[in-house]
Image (cartoon, rainbow, N blue to C red; front, top):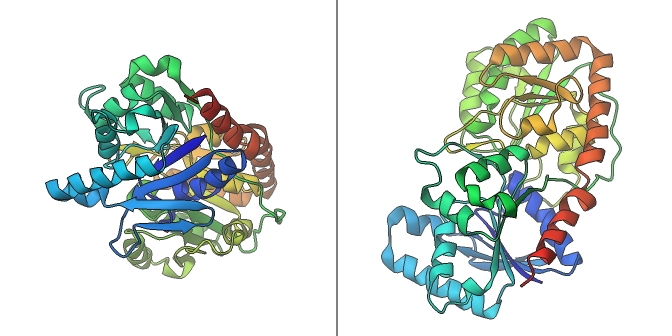
Length: 383
């Protein structure tokens, strides 16, 4: 089956969606689905076309065309997309999240006599959309309503999609994320000193400022604790200033991505393996909430307890008092209390970590629950 994987962003951008697609697309190729990737050209320095591993990547300046309202650029992108659909006539277009680039997909589908309408379309929501002013209106509602199938990476995402487009109830389903098991074994949880880990894009929605705000209280209970924020993004410098202003600068590390080039597939796993626990104090941000929390799954697979906010799909990954602890959103005191409790009860921490490993194996198996279900969906949608 010929599939166009259409993503708002892809390599070399680093993040949960990009991390998933980096692994998912080759796995689906192994199951017989020929794929190319269409994504935003987020920087003019990125080549418009290149091969990344086993996958051909095509980038278009979707965001620039929309933000500048450049009619000529919009028309040029449409022509180039039409040419690409002729060179690679897809059986299926799989849209990952709905952003500015979806305007161009909808335009292609609506073009009279164009090649795109012949392809089936699937949409996967990797985040939980925030409520819209008018239910079902706007680009998101239109994309969902016209899709042949809609999936979400959590039940929360599926439920939200069905609220926006009630007609998709019979053509929508849940497909949880997954990750291949790493080729390293979990090490014992370290408590002398303990390491608290935040892992992911450094943006407001991840709530890492709450982790920094919690550190003074954490250090009162455990003076040797350290916080490692592994990732990069627009909030990184502000977090550094915040830590210094709170007097906890020596206890907070912000080294950036552990391996921004993805040249070492085990680099992130080794970082997780150093941690005592993972913190995910995510908060609703603008038009989205945390859809799944891939870094939470990474921690669970390595036997690390997770302290997470009760938001979006995180509550389906992290089970309170079974695989970690759930706290209220935007509550640094609650976060500090949960961290302190785990640090003061190592046996409970180890039980939570083992609970996470068990849940990951039961619900989020890579081949069975992620790759296998997308493969089955593709075959179901075959024209």
